[in-house]
Length: 266
Length: 266
DNA sequence: GAAAACAATATCGTATACACTTTATGCCAG
DNA sequence: CTGGCATAAAGTGTATACGATATTGTTTTC
Image (cartoon, rainbow over all chains, first blue to last red; front, side, top):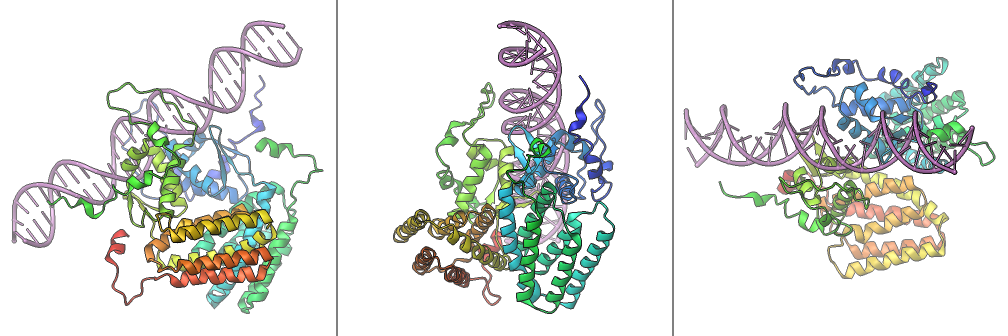
């Protein structure tokens, strides 16, 4: 039998993933060697392990390194993070609660694949949330906060000319999340965070032929309107901005040949 | 030492709680007696046990039988539901993800107590979500759906005259959740469901001197506007309706004597 | 040679075991 | 009688074990 295990190389996938864990904390916890005296179990109070796993997968999804449909087998995650399945499952369940992974009974976890229908619903929700956020953000606006937004724009601009890994999340997501935080409403911010991560999956899945330059310019215009305190204008532009993003998404049409890769992932 | 364990009688609390499980499924799974031959473990495919636990606690919170601050010790839940801590913890973690319980490290789970600050944020979010839902619900409105709304109103009306246990959730919550469902956007509906459960905690915590009759009349008026297809009017009334509810909430003022019970609960 | 039945493997679901932390109890000093 | 310390009990955190299920590879039969 030919060793054709590379057609679904989910093993490779974790190599870059691990690189994004906050620091080299993973290496500190080596695997116990069989037959060896069990080491004194010392709970490192640093960051609970399940949070590390959650963050790693979350970031990998936002960075579009983990793509929809990819498998997340528990044993592999256990080895990578040096913990038992208990904690891996805990993290996976939280991720499932945030619609980032899909937990199929008895068949393991995969990165979620939002359906076209879901996509539409997510964008409707996002427009509603961001429309609610904008007036609050403007009301709470201070020179210091405007400066923060401009700083985010600058980082965005740099990322534009330097198309490294730091992809969608870094490029556009940060701006929106920052705005949500400035609105000072953690409930709305949490909703938006969830929607942003799902949007990241959508963008990965449906290959937005993104005009990043245009997107960036809209962000700049938004900051101007916010600084000017133009609630109506800023809210309208945000809505248009989101509509434009949605319009760029190529949802699979009935006449297109179904993408086998996606189907395999699903 | 006097046996003063009744000051926090969380044991009693579960007795009515169990009464609300979908059916007597709990009784089917008896406790294994120590020393006995382990019975053949048969996974009952009915409903996964953790969902049962989740639902029971969720419903109990919505019914205001479980009040903020109440302890939810794992061993007790294990016995009540006849499962191991694994499943209990799974349910508790999901509940924590939905902000219904608070998981304090090493100190167990308690029913969440939204702070005044959180309360304000939740209401802002709720107004935004329901404002987004209303046009969609009206757009999708059909005679059959209007009839469903009217049916909900009728149930609400009956509950008004028959003040049994079926409290806030049944009284007002159903109407809003039904409307969200009719909007046909599951994302927004999920957000609203979360907000409704948190509102239930808020209402329990801050003792709304609710004018249920008035609330009910506003619902009736809303259905009329929806049936008439008056998007502007319905959205405006909904907003006013929510503002009125929020205005009725008695957030603790600085000049009031702090409620010892609440503080103990936190 | 192709399809179906079977066996083997990998992986998931749940229970249980043990370590650690917190909370309660009891004792003694003041 | 009160306050603080030592000990005991209860409860949580994580790992591991084992049964159950899904998937894959192999064999058998037509």
